[in-house]
Image: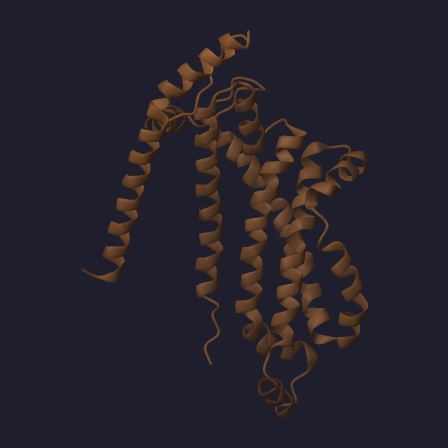
Length: 275
């Protein structure tokens, strides 16, 4: 059996074991639901239908949601497909804006020691700031929750791109640059024909890291601002105490994140520099 087939088989076995253990622990949710109800009655609290869902219950909810993913019955009742599209659109808007700014600026920093030393203090101060810390200021200045979310994605994704681009440019071998000087290539020609191809693998690493961070942050941002998006969907289902939908949405967040990362990873294969 080939290595890929063994890996697929092992992955399937792990999934089956996970499902079985999940069902055994949760007891399909019934035991947890009963214990929770007894506790609430003992404490004089109202009865609730919330319980820890088992894997089969989550699969059932996933089938229901994915059967009609794009329905729209009002502000608080939209399909999972629509919510994901809202989130992906915001992520792509902020992400592409950061690409437009971070990659050229990273090139400039990497090629100019003066710019590197001048901008390094600002980068080191702004980079550690949590993106969500910018949200209150963005909401006050921009006065729009959607644009504020896009700004937060921009501010969180720009740093990995900027740093990796600058590092990739600075890491280009001196022999390559010497060849450009020998051929009397100008600055722009050297940048596009020598430095860019050699630094592309590092740049794509920054692009992948930024995409992962962007997808992480948008969920938290939408929980704060509400309205639409997968983050709002998770929070709304939690308010409804529908934990099966919460777990299902968590799985969808992971699947979409893997899909976005794989797109950039596949694109990077076409630009790998081989010496």
